[in-house]
Length: 333
Image (cartoon, rainbow, N blue to C red; front, side):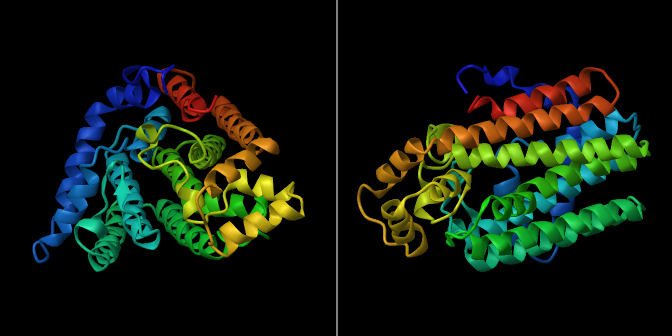
C-alpha cells in the first residue's frame, strides 16, 4: 500500500463525497443496534461496528443510488441493512474460524463467548430484514434475501471444500461468490433498484459489485501468502494454518507432482503441519507461478468491474468507483 497514500485512497474520497449520507447511516445503525431487553447486544455490536472498518459495502449502496440520481431517503436504510448483514456474517465467521483477531482487535467471541457472537449475529440479521422491509420494495427484498442465502451457502460450501484437494477453481469461485461477492453485488444492485434506474444500469451495477467482490477476495487470499500483516490485520499463512484451499494453493495442487501432492495431502487434508511447512508451501507456490497467476486473475476481475461501469452515467461518482476497482487490487498490482 506504500504507493497509495491512505488519505488519497478512493474509499476515503468516496467517504468524503458521501459523508452526509454516511452520518445518517451511522446514526440509523446506532439506533437499530439498541436493545431494550438485552444490553449485551449493543455491547457486542458496538465493538464490531465501531472497530473502524472501511464501511465499503454501505458506501457502495449509497454511491450506486446517487449515481442513478436518487434523492432519498431509503438508500440510507439499505446501506444500514447491508452493513448489518455484513456484521452478522463477521460475528458468525469468527466463531466458525475460531478467530482471535478481526481488524487488529480481539474478536467478539474472544471478548464475550461463542454463544453471544452467534445470537447477536442472528439479531443483526433480523434487524436487517426489518430495515429492508421499510423501503416497501419487494425487488429489494428479493435481492437481499437471495444474497443472504447465497452468503450462508458459500460458507457451508467452504466447510466441505476447504480441506479437500479435489476442490477446483470453479468450486473456489462459487465459495467466494457466496461469502464475499454476493453482498458486494447486492449492495450495488439495490442502490440502482431503489433509484428506479433503467434495467441496463441495474444489471451493470450488479456486475460491477460482483467483479469487485471477487477481486477483493482473491487479493485477500493472495496477501495471505505474502503481505505485511499490518495492512490486512491477519498473519501471513493464516489460511495455510487453517487448511483453507484458496486460489494460490488450488493452482499449485493442479500442477503438483506426486511428491508435492503428498505434501499438500499431509498439510491441508490431514492437517499434519510441522515447522517449515509454510515456507515449503510458499516455495511450491513460487515454483508453479501460482501467486503470479492468482494476481493476474485478481487484476482481470478489476478490469471486468471497470468495464461494467461504462453503462452508468459519467461523473465524479463513476470515476471514484473506477478508482476503487484499481485500489482493491493495488496491493498486488
